[in-house]
Length: 123
Image (cartoon, rainbow, N blue to C red; front, side, top):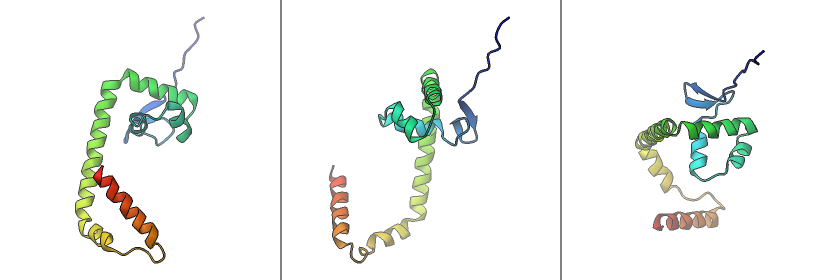
């Protein structure tokens, strides 16, 4: 008699896109970390995933690379559009915030932060 094989699917399609079953974690979030060269073991630990979950997610991404990459690019474009929209909507408020003086007693720390920001722009 043949054994009945039940397959647990770790990757499911939800309203948020491809996700890890039983979680709110999307594959696009995992892709962010993979593209930042995080090792799978660290991603697994960071998101409290089981060995099976991380293995099946990595396998799914590898087996469906073109589809996942295309969806990932759409997610990145949508996020960039949203960021641009909110920056436009809040342009005046952001300008007001930039003009605020440092909090009392934090002037030295504020100066270090401003110097660090300036060095990041130069690079």
